[in-house]
Amino acid sequence: MEVSKLPAYLAARLVKAAIVVLAIVICNFFLIHAAPGDPASIIAGQSGAADAKFLEQLRAQFGLDQPLYVQLWLYLKGVLTLDLGFSHRQQMPVSTLLWERLPATLLLTGSAFVFALVVGVSMGALAAKRVGTWWDSIITVLALVFYATPLFWVGLMLVLLFSVALEWLPSFGMASVGVELSGFQAALDVGRHLILPGLTLGLFYVAVYARLTRATMLEVADQDFVRTARAKGVPEGRIQRRHVLRNALLPIITFAGIQAGQVIGGSILVETVFAWPGIGRLAFDALLARDYQVLMGVFFCTSVMVVIFNLLTDLLYAIVDPRVEMAG
Image (cartoon, rainbow, N blue to C red; front, side, top):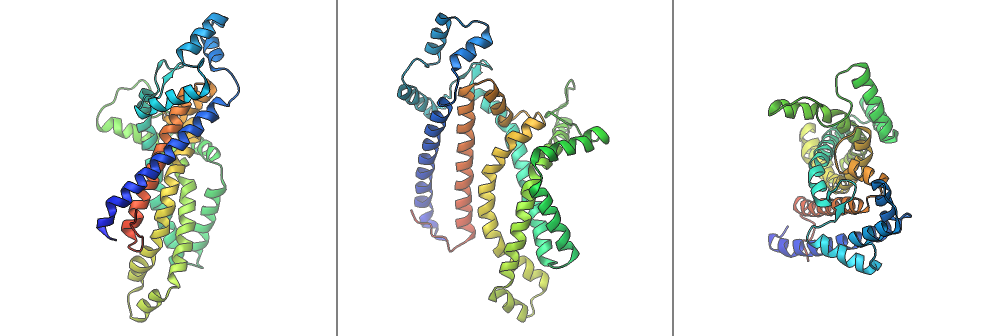
């Protein structure tokens, strides 16, 4: 890798990322406004007044009386200043709502992502090292089960087992209700609430990483440089760690960067099942209430995070693999 090309490469990637985010924002705007129903009528219905004059006031207040292209321009100007609108249901700015809910989502998705990556790669490496044995068979079967089982069913079964039957872990929320905790006790309480949703979200991706690691390591193990290392008398453990696994990690890094964005999308279902107070649950509630400003804000937030994850993956891949050209 040529370090001198890094600034140009990063600048080019940032420009492309900005264009992608802009295109996503515009597409989300038109998709939301193409949905059936009048937001003003919904707001008026929730407030208990639906006369024509009140509807006109609501449309003027939220800019719904303007032409669509004017609404798009005003929304784009707000996005540039991080003004994502106002939630009529929550009665507060959308940006404030997102900042309040984002840490919970990042905690859940980050924990599930690290768990899936560590456990999945470890299982795949063990299966590749013991290929053809009962270890390989057990890991393959578990990976298929985790991959084929719906997330909501896994979550419900975990709740029935660990919360209802064994009473070991809490079944919903992010913290205990009615209990004031601080410091280590508060962190421990959040950790106990995190176990079940983190497992539910992470088990699916454990299966993906396990199968990918196994297949990639078996492919690398047939390369000439691995055979040469064995012929030179290099210990098998060192061959598996420094030659096979190290080269097998390159496609895993690429796939992990893509999966990092998908984990955020999958958190919507998990947050709903476990009442986890993140942006996924916020999006679900906003969809039921037709709170379009919140929905567009959630879409914008998740889109930016996916683009950032992909950008970090490109940079990491370019650093790990010297064959990647850092060209603008």
